[in-house]
Image (tube, rainbow, N blue to C red):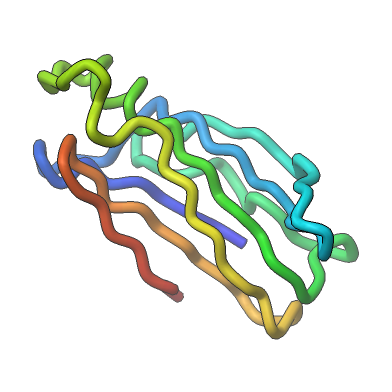
Length: 115
């Protein structure tokens, strides 16, 4: 599983974004799998999650976008329209690669399953 973050308002990779990866349990609770910070290319060095522990199930990536947007010099309202951005998604094939990027600006975001 990999991710990257692009700042669409400035047209550059989003460096320094804190990302949390959570495994979502059947009861709705969550278990923290990993925390990471994006590098200068807006990517995590290596995979967020791989190997024997990666399984079919529901996961959530939590992007701390507001902290990044403020640090990058974007003017935000208080409270910010977008601050913490959770993306919950399902993994149906644990042998496949899942790439879940975030494209962010102060007033919108998008994601998709990449390759």
